[in-house]
Image 1: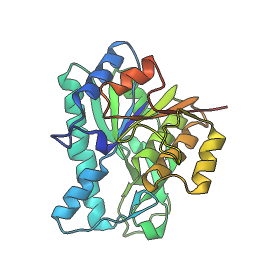
Image 2: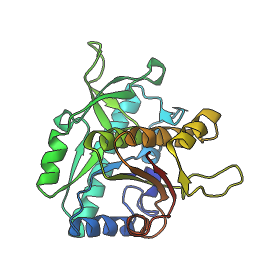
Image 3: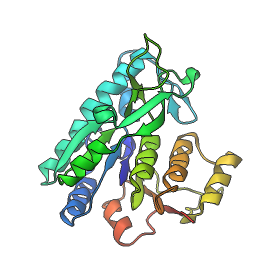
Image 4: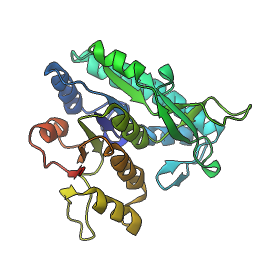
Length: 262
């Protein structure tokens, strides 16, 4: 399973994956690997909000989401970004289908914190649609939105914005993925001296979160790693801007930071 961060999209076309990443995905599918992709798109959402004169605010790496922000997030994530990724994979001979967490009630949630607005906490993952797509030979490409299924006030929206790292961790845990790889805009996790940390244990990851040593954007990613490790043996955080980083990580390892379960 692969989570693709918005910052790893191509440098010239911000909604398109680097060609090397797409080639890696298609090659892995050709080899018979069952893949699920969860993608972000936060930087593009910020760009579109800025065009509309709407400011962006984050709390511990999660976007504060009012109604106007939610509408932009839905449009960018489930529309522009999702379909560009699917088109890129299919154009190179892969078979991919774009969905969001709303489709098939895949991701069901509730409001996480009223101060964050319409940001969701995942309460259930319904794997039926994902399993059907995988059995058909397709790569599900999932936009990180969820169905507002619990404790929804009458006037509240039916869709929630959910951090893509959170969605990736929840799906990986639910489907018992062999491994989860985060393609990010950094090479991995660094220590206080700026050195890349090649391996972490779950305990060391928890300690890093507790110490406040993780950057705001890395907080939901590390929490997602720990969530995935409840049923996934290996989680890796690697630099998505390194050519063919995904294939290198799977074939050779040691590309970024790896967290292994007990």
